[in-house]
Length: 297
Image (tube, rainbow, N blue to C red; front, side):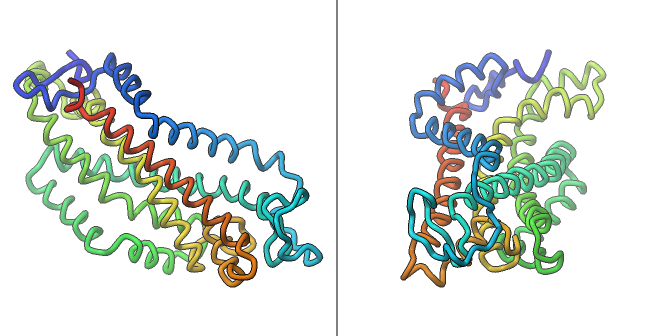
């Protein structure tokens, strides 16, 4: 007996997703055109971030005052900034930085938050109280303020931003996973597996964790969008990526002084942030609907 193929017969609305049901999830996701386009856009962003820097013809950090604040043209597709750097090239290179920060920070947050949530939900008692009080302390601070405080202590850099956003993401993963674990551990097959002599570690790894993957996946997708926003905000405030890094928030901050006379300097970095965040939000919402057991009927 495995957790992946088991359902709560007393409450079918809380049935967990089995391996065979992933096909149903995919079919449901395909019917959601908005989520599907969000997924395609994410794949395109990842592809461009990997391949794009090798195809650009301009240096993203080289200053060229002879081409300062050029409007979009055949040579400079999106124009140039106040230092004469090609905005299109900087956006392509910045996409790599943005996605690395988004994925890395959420991965670190999940690696810490998920085990904390499982331990709190599975064992309960004093351990649950200690872990959740720690989570409550993190939640007591507004996320962006907590990130600003951490970056101020660690210093402005991409690594500091990843750490700050990761810490900011831990409480969300811990709370979501704890709630899912509390539901899973009450199922009858968990008692049956324990009666057969399975250890707690085996139960957690083989039966609990596979059955809470869906909320973890959904939360990860949505948190990447938030991570991109927070990282861009930190760089905009001068606490994240430092010049001449082509990070989108940094580019937006550099272009704000010229946005009335040369709007393209700030417009395109802002649009890039909007498109990336929108893509992950649309795909995350679609995943949440597709993985919701209440919609299986």
